[in-house]
Image (cartoon, rainbow, N blue to C red; front, side, top):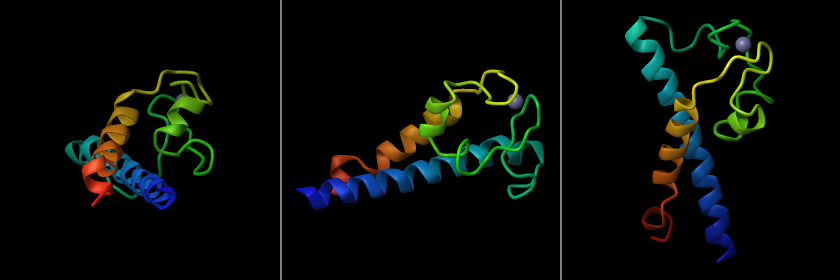
Length: 98
Ligand SMILES: [Zn+2]
């Protein structure tokens, strides 16, 4: 049982990372922007996001309470929803119990 919980957490985190990246793809590709450069930044103030503090999928959105840490402008919840839905689908019981 404990092993399944650890496995589910790992799969959830992996899914959240995939969801976060897909959010970048959905935002940048239609606009003709690079997927690699510039690194993640606030769309309002252009401040680069800290990898350790601001760029953690799902959790980071809750830590900053849905607002940019630097300018206070709202961060779209679509990134959090995309990460949550992808990680949820990865860590669903059907996926983890087999
Ligand atoms: Zn900002």
